[in-house]
Length: 613
Image (tube, rainbow, N blue to C red):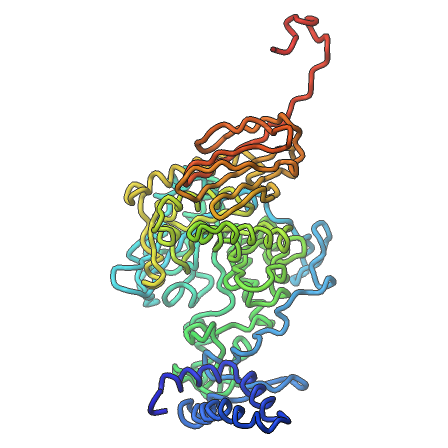
């Protein structure tokens, strides 16, 4: 304890987080029948036992390690106070894949909602699956002076909850031309409800944060965006609230009488205390006690959140929800949440933030679950495979995605408000920044652009979240920004002209460390697109087997995007040779052979009706 306090603290944290594993290992070793294993047992077990004892008796205050309330028949478990309460155990045992009979009936089947209304689950809206999503982070973020401020800039990092509302939200109107020319069809606003700081510590779900506006100004912006054909999705933070949310304030005010508070079941409350010196302990998101976690299996909480969802979809008129940490809530909750949303707006969309696990647990548009999810498992590979010059990583992610999520249309991205911006990730080889956006807009899935990425805005995660949420700039204000903006705008326009780039099936044809060639095949037409990428600094010529595409020899292969030599046509051996210049992405279309015209057409042989030589 005196010689190496850092080691002691590290062991203590490990023991607290993995208490059951430590006890099991010690027990197994202690029960060993081989006496010669006893010295080893003592050597390993004694430090852990001392850490446990010192942690419980001295380092960790009394009441920190305790038994949590449990139902009859539920296994006994230990949990820590405050933000750590119960973190070693699943928050919801029900957070697992539903059985077939638990899914909402398929589209077209009339069912009765909780309120008694009759409706049928709707499929994923076409406007979402075919669209280009754009993320705006509107609020300020605590961080270093001069950083943060959100999209609008100058937004205070903290909300005093008493100043009159500003009108910053109206500044969105100044950027509509920028967004429309880029090709954006949907905007997803990160948390915009009244909150204490960054937006994820919600105070009032029915009000716009006063630091950027109010409900009236938001409705004006919503109307302007809808007139220009741009849909609006809001960030729903329903896993946790801020400490100043009315229900939690009631619990704090109740003090030692919290057990008699009508809102005690809204959160995961137990005996103990917190770092805020509350008269109770509570579960919080990842141990951040400023974010107490809601209990969505409480009927009162569910009814409240369903009311929130229907208010914004129905009365205000937004088009959907991006749902924060959706993978931490049970799929049965999202099933019922979607039912409530359908009552508010049948054409809504639910986009879940899913990071870990099998996305099928929470995303299932035809099963009455979420319409889509954030594809973290593929999105990282989009830029890191370029940075590391390792397209094997990306093709492995492709195969996994096509195997597990073939029936989903997930959202891909290069940056967001939580991770380093792509311009910073690829700053070592700036040419790759253009290729990253090329990949984003040509692979299977719905592209999402984080505001400023189209202008090549940098942002380093090591400098804090505020560095990722800087004020919006014009493309010309950043070196190379206008060139990147124009490239993305042109590529989005091309994407919209070819249905197979939007919805087409994807298949890898060839890949090496720096070369990748894949196809996109339409499910409704016979169109086939081939996408070719070279991430190296040298020209490459790749011979590719095209037999799997089912096109006969002689089928023309016409380049429609990117520089390089002509490919010609599918060869007699069903192969073609592709030239890809350095740091280049190319797109080709396989032109379907036209059926031969009947002989002796109008004008006779050699007349006006004869086909040209």
